[in-house]
Image 1 (cartoon, chains in turn yellow, blue):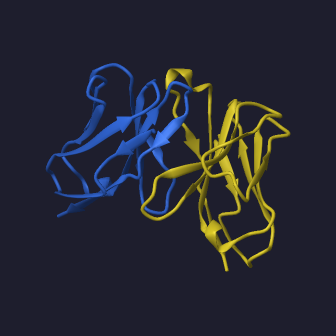
Image 2 (cartoon, rainbow over the protein chains, first blue to last red; image 1 turned 90 degrees about the vertical axis):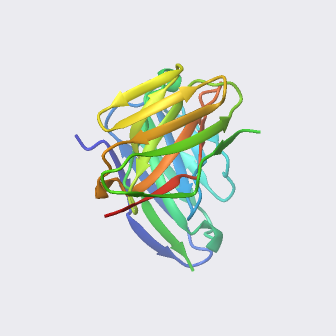
Length: 114
Length: 109
């Protein structure tokens, strides 16, 4: 059982380049999330999805786009990378959160933008 | 506004007990989580409290007081592998997660 798979694990971009991070879960979870984590800070929500075909903005959505064409996949795109987007990115999934369901996380992506 | 406050860093000795405190302000309340995060890894779930009181799971216990907006995580018989960051996370009335910045726990032999 793979759980949440996140690719790639590491990436270095030049300013202005684009890339897509892929998150896949095999637990049939409705909710999926993209977070970023910077040193000394908690996780900040970028975008999230409450089901196939739906997406919503989180706390820090600017500069990012997402898509959830299939229930098991949640893609995070950076159209024109900036040094401020250097961070560790985590994808997560969960069942409906109304009973305090825990999040299942991917292993993270270390992104550096030069 | 919504806010989670917890100490930035704590130090404890192997074999001892440590209590990590967390105060929260959320728009409504649907529970509080604690996650553990080792350096370079993703967070992993430790506990969830929605009712007042103490929940015990082995060496780890979590306490909640809804009237005081307060929670703590208690770690007993500390082991070196407990060196990690501990994240306090509130769940608001819209089931949005509010993450604290985390408490880095350093265990010394």
